[in-house]
Image 1 (cartoon, rainbow, N blue to C red):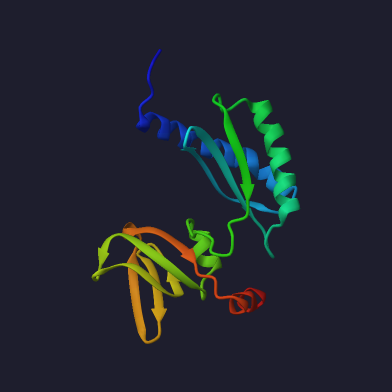
Image 2 (cartoon, one colour):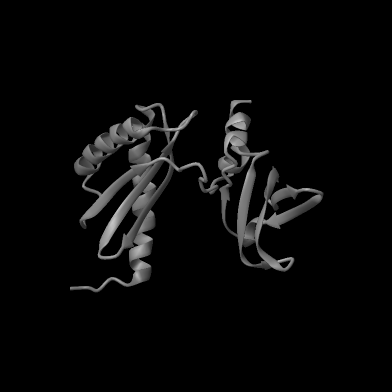
Amino acid sequence: MAVKTKKTQLTEAAVICRRVRSIAGPAAAAAAAEVAGVEFLPEGTQWILRVTIDKEGGVDLDDCAQVSRALSAALDREDLIKQAFVLEVSSPGVERPLKEEEDFRRYNGRMISVYTREPYEGYTMFSGILTAYGAEGVTLVYGEERIAIPLALIENARLIYMGQENANNEEE
């Protein structure tokens, strides 16, 4: 019996994520939602397939349950994942991660936090209003300060929940 290395497992997980994203698309669309992210990773002694869905106005528990049932049936038909796993379908939450170009464009003008892989201008964490996104990076404004952070340095980015202020911005 061949022993799988961590690198092999992670490569297989990436392939599974791409395939699950395409399978989950129609299930999410039936709930008027879209797939915002897919992760397949070990947590403790089990594997977790985490599918994040989103839609205008946000998703609720019924949306998650509907997508979970449809996706579970589709995954059973496809027989894509050979090992046991737990399926989780959820919303990205109010402090949702920003991963794709569309995420940054959708939340332009909103307060975000950005963490870098290594210090940039002496810091690894930045927060401010997202004012630009492009091939070079993201631009944040905080007060009178403006900083452009190169994409290659960004470890992760997410919205910062500002209470009612954010809700008002989304309605505009």
